[in-house]
Image (cartoon, rainbow, N blue to C red):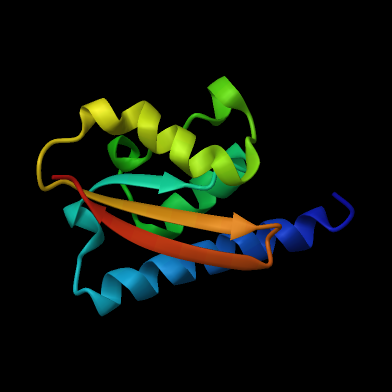
Amino acid sequence: MPHGREVFTNACRYMAASAVKLLSRNEIDVGALRLFVPHQANRRIIDHVANDLGLAPNQIASTIETFGNTGSASVLITLITFLSQLQRNDLVLLTVSGGGYSSGAALLLKN
């Protein structure tokens, strides 16, 4: 990627910011999350965003080592991979980044 450092910086900044905004808007503490499922672009981004959010290692879902960067499908692949570990009423936070220049977040509640 020609602007790798810039993409990394923006992906980390905006994935974390969208997650914080969503949690704040819903008055949810990061400790209430059962699982954090970030875009699986690379391990450094996952670790950086998780650290910025103050997540414990057992809250972070990752499949980057198994599947690599699967692009826009990475969050769904990771969520499905970890779905069996979720219990009723568990909160899951998803964060995504598009080429480092767009981002978003979603909260899911397991039924």
